[in-house]
Image (tube, rainbow, N blue to C red):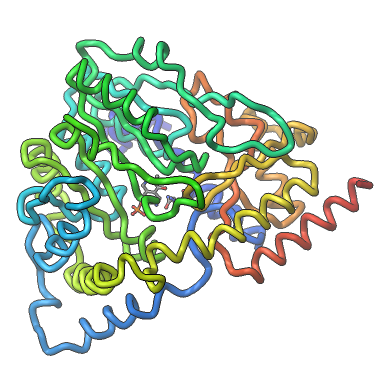
Length: 421
Ligand code: PMP
Ligand code: GLN
C-alpha cells in the first residue's frame, strides 16, 4: 500500500534496516547470552557514579537547567586539558570543542555540517555501520576501500588487515570532501600504525580533504600497541575532526555523551547543525563527566588511572574469548584495540534459511536461536559490493563479567561436543 504523503521521506529510503534494532530484538526474544551489541555488563567506575550523585545532590540549581549549546563549560575545559597534550596543540575549550548526543550525534552533525550533495566521502571498511546511511542521507557519494587480511590461519591479528596504498589513492579526486576513519576500529579492533596514519594524512593534504577520526575506543589499546591521533600529525590538526565518547571512556554507554575536537572553521557546520537539532546535551551528565575527567587528569600517570587500567583488565577477557572460539573451530582475529573480536566461521555450514541474506546473517540468527549465544554479523560493516568480505565472520563483544564469559564457554563447549570434536 502506498503511504503517499504520510510515508518515509525519499532521502531516508534504503536506510530503514538497522542491525542494532534487529539483532538486539532477536537476542532478547531468544533470551540468548548477549555478546552482540557492545556494552559492558558491569558497573561503571565508582567515581563516575559518585560524580553524578554529587551533581544531583548539590545545591547548584544550574546543573538542572540548559547549559551552553556547544558544551557545558566545565566539561569542555576538562576535555581541552586532556586533549591538548595528546594532539600537541593548545585546544581552546570554547571554540574548538563541541559536546553532542553520543559519538553518533557528533558523526551526524559533522557529516551534515560539511558535505554537499554530490561530494564524495571515502569510507574505510569494515566501518561502524551508521557511516554509510549518514553519508547517503546528506546526499554525498560514499567510496569504499576495504582493509584486506594479509594472513590466514587459526589465529591472526587485526594488524594483518591492511590498506592498499595505490587503491586508496585511486579514490581521491577533486570531488573528495571527507575521509571517515576509525582507530581503534570497530568491528576489527585494528589500531592504525603511524605509517598507516601518515599515508592517510599525506593524501588528505595532497587532495585537500577533511578527515573525520572516530576515536571512541582511544583508551582501549592492548599491550604493545599505541593509539596515535591523526590530528597530531603535521598539517592534520587544521583538517581533522576527532570524535570521542563518554560511553566508551567510562563504560556508561547509556549516557550518550560524545564530543568533537577540531579547528573552529571545521566546527562551524557541525555546530550549526547541533544547535538546531539538539541545541544542548543534558547538563547534569556533562557535569558528572567533567568531574570524572578532573579525577582522571590528576592521575593520568598513576596505576590508579581508570583510562589506563581498563585495557589491562580487558586483555585477559579478550584472550579467554579467543581461546574458546578457537576450541569450537572458529579462527579469531585478535584485536589490538577496542572490545570486539572477529572470528572466522568458514569451516561451519551455512544454516538453511528462507531469507536472501549473507551467510553471517543466517549464521548469527541460527546461533542466537539454537545455541542461545548472540553476536553481530560483520557484513553489516561493509558496502553492498564488499559484503562477501565480512560474511565468513561473526563479531563478538568481550567487555563482559567473567561469569558471562564462563557461560559463553559452557555454550561453546557443549556445541563442540555436539560436533563430535
Ligand atoms: N563510533 C564507533 C566506532 C562506535 O563503536 C560507536 C558505538 N557506540 C559510536 C561511534 C557511537 O558512540 P556513542 O554510543 O557515544 O553514540
Ligand atoms: N558501538 C556499539 C557496538 O558496535 C553500540 C552500537 C549501537 O549503540 N548502535 O556494538
